[in-house]
Amino acid sequence: MAASVRIADLPGRIGDAVTVLGWVGTTRSSGKIGFVVLRDGSGYLQAVFLKADVPPAVWERFKALSQETAVAVAGSVRADPRAPGGVELTASDVTVLGPSTDFPITPKEHGTAFLFEHRHLWLRSRRQVAIMRVRHEVIQAIRDFFHQQDFYLVDTPILTGAIGETAGTLFETEYFDLGSAYLAQTGQLYLEAAAAALGRVYCFGPTFRAEKSKTRRHLAEFWMVEPEVAWNDSDDNMRLQEDFVSYIVGRCLERRRDELQELERDTGPLERVTPPFPRISYTDAVTRLQQLGTDISWGADLGAEAENQLSQDYDRPVFVYNYPRAVKAFYMKQNAADPRTVLNNDCLASEGYGEIIGGSQREDDHDLLLARIREQGLPEEAYGWYLDLRKYGTFVHSGFGLGVERTVAWICGVPHIRECIAFPRMMYRLYP
RNA sequence: UCCGGGGUAGCUCAAUGGUAGAGCAUUCGGCUGUUAACCGAAGGGUUGUGGGUUCGAGUCCCACCCCCGGAGCCA
Image 1: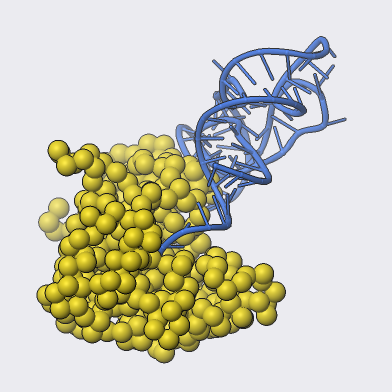
Image 2: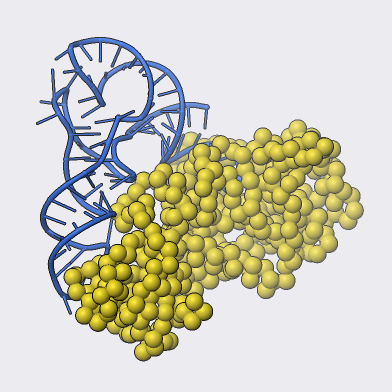
């Protein structure tokens, strides 16, 4: 086994005799010549069996191969323009390591319900492999970006008290003798505490929302990266966001061209993702939407349809900033220039993919923050430590949260974010 | 939670109220360069569950269950 070669390394081994370990995708036979496409995670390889050149037992083993059989194929590496990838294996032997009969996911089309019931097997498909590779690149780019910019990673708790943005959308679980604990909706509040210690910080992990959402943009469990920066105001915050998003998209274009091509993604719109992003205030956005014939009035939150209409005015992601205070979370800083609004922003991805970021400058005035907590009927006692941050050296600070699955869906051009995480958690799906 | 669509072979789908079918998958046979290969043959069904109308129900009616799409909420 140790002497095997990964498919991705084969172009450098032309002429060598090698053994490749992998899984059988499709097989084809023309009586005296047979083809097997193998997958090993690093790539795809076509192995060719010539009946005249291999022992009869090998030919019989080839003929018996079925979809997803785990095999070791020995042979010699050969450059061949007729092969996908330009490299082929002329096989001399095949050994079945793990048989597979009646693999449920056939080469023809399937419905989404069936595919998600077989998610553990569906992951092996070319499309899902491509999406997972892009997701990997997005996550690696996120970590590299913050590391290069001297951010510190701070891991925030997943089990929390009754704290977050709004009650009622929290998953609840028993917690020893202390009553209920809740799965974290955000690490932001903890991160604000850490920002006072380390300046530039971020957290990155799973986030849980018990919202009964059934849309292509929502999951009950999703991954979110949240930076928080001391001394950044809302403008600084948006500049960080556009640099960040552009870096992530650029990395995928640089390193994941093959995967985007496999997904038939038109990369034109992605090439245009460079700073600065256009910005429009909420108030101007409402005016624009009214021009477009929407019956929205000032004060209402922007729905998915309104966001979609707005983003079509631009050829790249757009910031919508300074929303009405009444429709936004309690921790957002009141806008001194227009107290009806807060210093926040959403970032809408291009091509109708909608909100990928929500961010804001945080309320740093103790009394205004306490008033907001009371206004929204939040459990004041749970926020004592959070209010402390405004008592001991309060400071201007801002941050945002970027949804990883939404970002991956946009970059990959896939319509539903549930394909952008290996095992999605949705309202009606907990298995596999 | 609300609105809309659906549930028939392992999968994707057909079938005027009148004998449940096709493609893929599986098994067998054929084919020396295939790209979701192709050609031929075979096996494979309690039509989501329960009740009702009818000479007769996959089809019509009622209830329930499950799935899909969208909305709200948000990342």
